[in-house]
Image 1 (cartoon, rainbow, N blue to C red):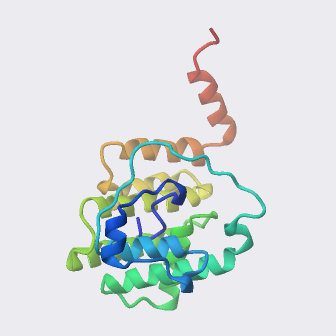
Image 2 (cartoon, one colour):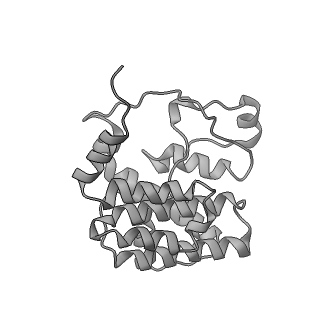
Image 3 (spheres, one colour):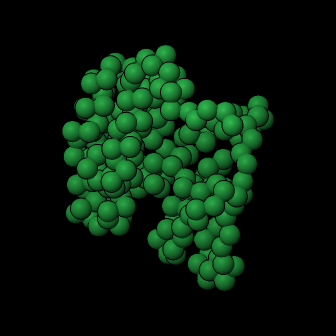
Length: 210
């Protein structure tokens, strides 16, 4: 996931102090407002870490948070971290490809269905580059690519239910575990079908009040 975003919620992180002392790994002030993302990416080369399946923080959004106040700087620095990783995969992306990668990583706005061809092609290129470099473990890396492929399709689903078929037929989707069909159904129910149909389906499936 580091290729797209920081995988950790910073307030929940614990680490061994002796590793910090041995490695000399520290926050880099040149990556202001994205220090943690830069730190995790560099640390990945010299230690192991993981997310535990426990909810350990409530995230509060407000007008004074870094993402809002310093969003431009944070985005620029995070872009540098992602570009560094693309180079490590053996890629030399063009400006257009870097922008495409940023759009896939953000998944913050709806994209037209025509954009999906470019997104699928880029994700497949990342998968193929990793097969050569063996930089990231498999099948975990392909599963992350598949999840970002799902997010890209969900963002384009306003163009019609054919988007669900585009998602399912791609060999990227095949990397998901058995739950991939649950993802496809969520794509149909939440983004493709009209809102009224989804609402009625939820009401129909909801158990009666006790």
